[in-house]
Length: 152
Image (cartoon, rainbow, N blue to C red; front, side, top):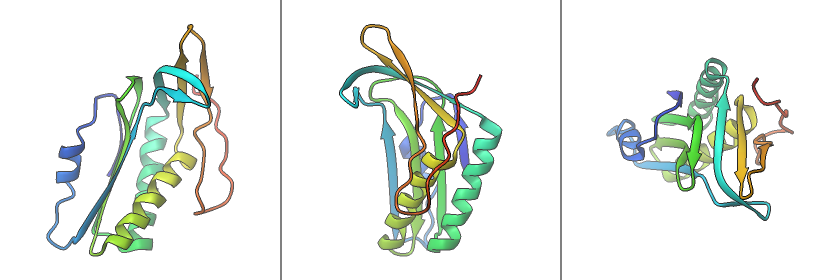
């Protein structure tokens, strides 16, 4: 399941939900709010999302990963709202029979989520300035990503 959440994420609880005796490997990814981006000091982030579309597209990404990597399980959650330094912004977890598939699938899901989900990030800088940041990046799993405008 892929969800959008305004509440803080509990990675331990999320990982436990993937428990399955068929799985020999579990790989997770945690994206945290960091204090710098492109040389600028960052104080906090705001995430906005078109939640219905983001959940639907997130589910599509998980289904693709399940088929492509023969996964036992897959889940993801993206936070929205005002996040502080160190807060968990996105969590992805996968289980598979073997570690290689789990590593590859986790990378695929996070890359696709960054490229395809209608989620927008606003950075708050020291001194009071803010800026919307392009979150659409893609690894070597596909072509160029579309740039989406901030939600109004």
